[in-house]
Image (cartoon, rainbow, N blue to C red; front, side, top):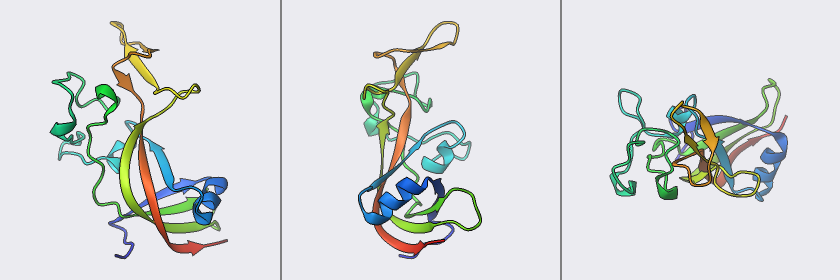
Length: 155
């Protein structure tokens, strides 16, 4: 398979993480799923809503459709299927290190707080978010599992 515009996700990355990927010590790249980025990481309907796997829903959750759904620690949304490669670029300068890396899998995991616990929260009746270890919402990360380095360009 060859990297094309259609099957390659372009991401900027810090030099330290780029170097770890190139040397082989970093096998995953993480991106937080946000309102502004979820369409890059998740399959969506024609209306732009995230598509979900019905087998991953723990119950008829009224929060289905919310990107931050906790769902008993299982993210029910479907990763974007077209991504086969990551095009990684260090920073935004014109002259920079770049690489194209194979994606072997895309999974999801909760964003962790400073103590290593899932970053869960709840929303009160005034629509205010508060940290809550038992909350029904959580911030999530897309995890890109990395394979072979297909191309490498050093500045």
